[in-house]
Amino acid sequence: MSFLILVRHGQSVWNLEKKFTGWVDVDLSEQGKLEAQKAGALIKDININIDHYYSSFQLRANHTLEIIQKVLNSKKNFTKAWQLNERHYGALTGLNKIEMAKKLGEDKVHEFRRSWDIKPKPLNKASPYHPLNIKIYEKISSKFIPDTESLKDTYERVLKYYKDEIQEKLSNENILISAHGNSIRALCKYLFKLDNGQIPNLEIPTGNPLIIELNKKLEIITSKYLDEKRSKSLLIF
Image 1 (cartoon, helix red, strand yellow):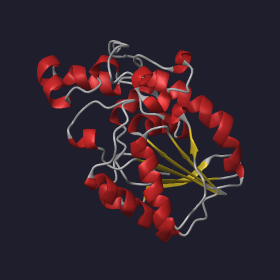
Image 2: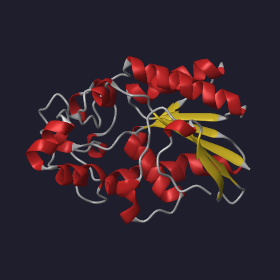
Image 3: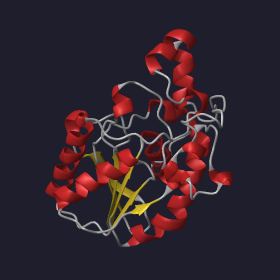
C-alpha cells in the first residue's frame, strides 16, 4: 500500500486576474500562499511519511511545494520536471478569460480550456510570454518547447514522465506532486480511467490535496480531497 498526493498550486497572481497563464512563470497570490499553508497542514494531519517530492519547472508550483515542506518540516530535495508544467495556452496566453468569453462566447472558451484535442492558435515566438523567452526554460531543448497545446498533448508528456520516473516508486513509497490544473487533470484521466468525455467536467481546486491510496498493483483503493469543503467533482472509490 502506498499514497500519491496531488496538489494543484495555490491561487497564482494570474489566477486572481483571470488570465490564461500556461507556461508563463508567475508567483502565488497572498491567498495562494495561505492555500499552500493550509494544504501543508492538512497533509501533516494525516501523518504520512513522504518519500519523494515532485514539481514542475514553474514558480507557483515550486513555491507551493516549498511552503508545504516547511509546514511538514521536510528538508528533502524535490525534483523539478518541465513535463509536469501547466498546459500551454498558445495565443490565449496572457489574455483575460472573462473578456475572451465575451468576445468568442463562453462555449468557445470552455472548448479551448477543457476539450481533449482542440488547441488554441500558436503563440508568436517573439512574445515575451513564449517559453523560448523565459529564463527558466533556457536549458530545455527547443524541440520540447511548445507554441500551443491541447489537453491531449499535455496528457502525453505528463503520462510519459509519470510512467518513466514516478510510477514504479509507488509500489512501496509515498509521493507528493505539486503541479497544475491540467497536468493533474491529465494524471487523473490515467489513474481514474476517465474517458475523453469526462475530462471537461473534472475540476481541480487550487491548494487542496488529493490523496490517492494504491495497492501493490497500483490500483486505486480510496481517494479524497483533504479539504472536503473545497472538494470538486471526482470519482470516489
